[in-house]
Image (tube, rainbow, N blue to C red; front, side):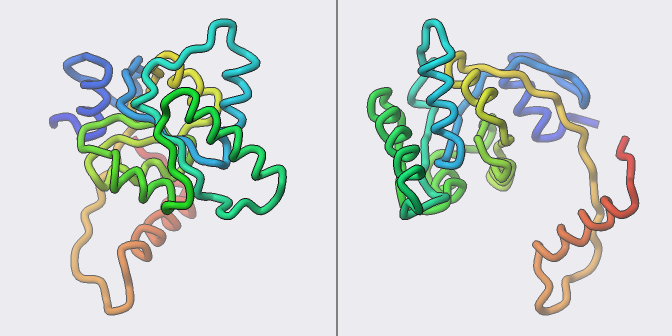
Length: 191
């Protein structure tokens, strides 16, 4: 069997001919997104923890304020200002109040075949456009931001053969939540 789309994207980003589940590869990142939930933490680490701070490629970065719009407190406003100022100082694309971060990314940035890190767990939704997106924490985001690279564990894949039609009023979301619920309840080991 050939490689999955995720494996092909990781192989290309790692500069190798092929990968397999369980492999760990150093990859070059095509794009990175961070939102107002955690960007201020990354900015603090960048400013206070690095000896020689630099951004590998500001054009690969996108900062999006979407979780607390409008700001719900002076503390939140201060963290969003930190984010806004850092983006301006470093030539980073910045969006505020223009929609949910993943909507903004998918409508303006995500392209098939790209490997994208996002400081948000829903970054995996970029797979809908043929990209490999994965959520990361602040430290991994910072590392990718300053080096342009990171490491990826090649994931295992699961194939589902779905047969039939969904009844009226039942949608794809209902289907996947049911599948996830069955996997979790049955303690399935996927090999």
